[in-house]
Amino acid sequence: MPFMKNGRRNYAAELAWEHKHKKNRVKDRAQRNAARSAVKKKVGAAAIKGKDVGHKKAVSKGGSNGLSNLFI
View (cartoon, helix red, strand yellow):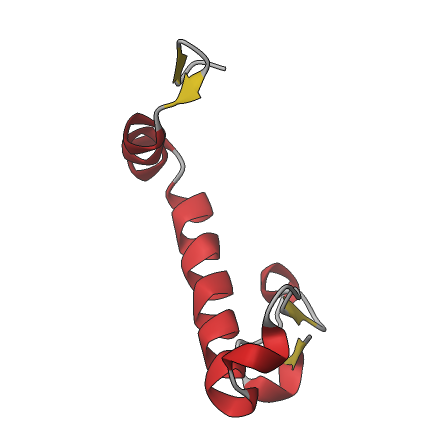
């Protein structure tokens, strides 16, 4: 991996590279984090601990980030 030194991953360098070269990836991650936060607020942190939160219809295919389009 280009961001590894001595077997350790350099997250700061990787994130800086993403912000400069892969703006869509940053936007997608922000939407996933917002979706997880919305579900966490609705059902509580304990209910989603260790589980994935996803979109029924992908945002890239026209789905929304609303609660009706999210699942645990």
